[in-house]
Image (cartoon, rainbow, N blue to C red):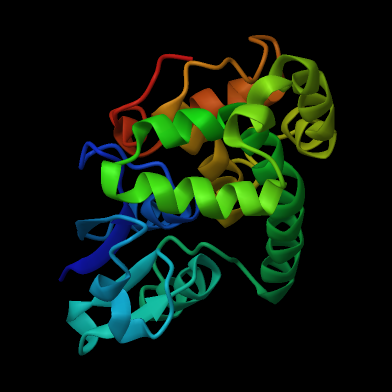
Length: 233
């Protein structure tokens, strides 16, 4: 029983940094499912053309008639339906709360990390992806990649302050899921795995509850995430 996962890679095939893919990699590890990871680059859209959409993660479940699912949220829902062991969601209300957190993370956590490490991402990309990445991201930010990160040191305190809701939870619980990780933890961990894969930038102070949580996440599943290529920050 193997699930094939199309996973965004940099110039080095084993350097994986997509926060959306990391959500699913952690979810698959959470469920103890065997995975065949397929490295994919931004400009290799033909490789996932069968999905009629241009983004990873994409999974193909070879144990269930080559069932194909894309979008990290849809994949998480599918995994709990097809493989109920070690559930990612415990009940419908848990799904709703996690979806709320997902929306916050994508509007606050992702942009905050991006403003710190966007140029580092570019510097780790395969040559075939660099023009695409620069063009599309500079269109989003309305300025060059260099300009985006030029004020990183000045904007870092605001980013750290934006983590207050997450920090408050982690001051009370070991994980966003309580005593053990849930899919909310995988959603939140994605941007930090992204940053660790490509940047030496220190995003969190050592006494931050979010930092302690990130360390616990790196050690989950026998240190699965900590073994991935990255920087010791």
